[in-house]
Each structure stands twice: as structure tokens, then as C-alpha cells.
Length: 281
Image (cartoon, rainbow, N blue to C red):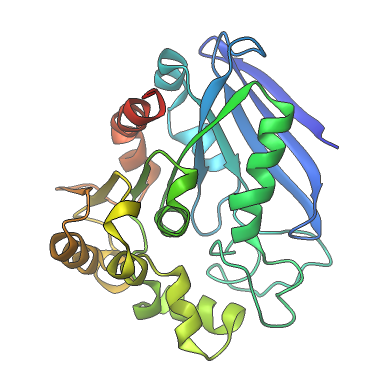
């Protein structure tokens, strides 16, 4: 059952927030959806799923990215889930990069996190099924995200290439098994067996990808991003893309940082990128 929390008309369409009890995370989850003008049961539209970064909720992208005008023009719905399970019974840590707000889009295997922190299952299976059941959308999906959410988008697309037409990311954590953010999260969510970490690492997954499963990707990264060297490891993705001949376009941008000022500057290009694949027959 969906509980409509808010509705606002924007760019001729509607932005709405909902909550529901999620089977995968065993708690109340919240998501936001933008429906472009003209979307109806007789005119269903494709969906871009957006995954946000550390400390974020469904609200950051919807309020700061400036995506609605172009999404309305292109006839694309946007769905933004929360970044982790939340609630009084959900384990947490007094840390911005772990616990609530920092689910890392994995299925946790370690107690006490394995009951609730199943964001991979939620994003890949439960949420799309819910969206397709309750809203005027087709089953054509693309996926995108920022930072931790960029990690989630690329990783999920690589593991489920049949589910998505395309994938993109802003400032993604591309090699989490080799950066402090990823090592902290993976060790506590997934345990000490590092072979399991590779299942959630973009660079590792791309190195194993079969050419028949290649998916068009676009990555944009600011050169003035203060997380670039220590956490994001974009140079590792360059090596994989070039070594495999993977169809991923990586764009470096002088002067841009890690913020939504960067995202809002290039979100139209990402929407146009996805539209070319979402609209293909």
C-alpha cells in the first residue's frame, strides 16, 4: 500500500512523494517520482531511476538537480528512492559514511545490518515492480546516480544489463574495494571475505563483463572534486574502459566539484543520453 506524502505540479507534470512498507528492507521506505505531462495508462512513459549519495534522501536530486523541464520535454519519468533503510529499529552509526543514509546499494550479510540493509534487492526488484504496478510507466528503465549512488547505478547496471537500456553517473565511487568509504562500508555490511566485495565493485564487474552484456554508459567527473583522488578513483575506471573497449564515455570537467552545482550543469545531457536508448524500439 502506498501512502502519498506530497504532490506538487512542476514543468507541466507532477512530483510526488510516497512511503510504503518494503519487504526487502523490513521497514518503511520513501521514494519520489516525477511524472511528465501526458503520462497516463494509455500513454505510458519510460523511467530513469536515480540513486543519490551519502547523507542524501529522495529529496536532494528532486530539489537541486533541475531535471524536470528536460524530463518533461523528453517524456521521461524519474524515480528517486531513499539511500538506505531508516527508522528507530534500523541499526545506525554516528557517522555520515555508514549506517542510515549510507546503504551503498548492497545486500548486507552481516548482523545487525542484514535484516534491513538490502538496498540492492530494493532497487533492482522491489521498487521497479511497485512503480510499474501503480504508475503509468513502461518496463523500459535506465539508471543513474551521484557519488555513492553513481557506484550503485553503474554496479547495478553491470550486474543486470538486461534490466536497463543505459546507465550513467556523476562523480561515482567506481572502485569501492580500494577506497576508504567502500572499505569501511563493505567490511561491516559484507564481512571480511573480500571476494564478496567484488560483486559490488564497478571496476571488478567491468573487468569480468562479457561483450554480449555491454551497456552504454556515460560518466561525468569534476576535476576540482575534493574526493577524486582518495575516494572516487576515476583513473581506475579509465583503465577498465580502455582495456575492455567498453562503451562508456567518461567526461572530465575542469573547475567542477562534487556538488549539485555540477549535477545541475550537465543533467540535461544525461537525460538526452538516456532518452536515445529509452525511446529506441
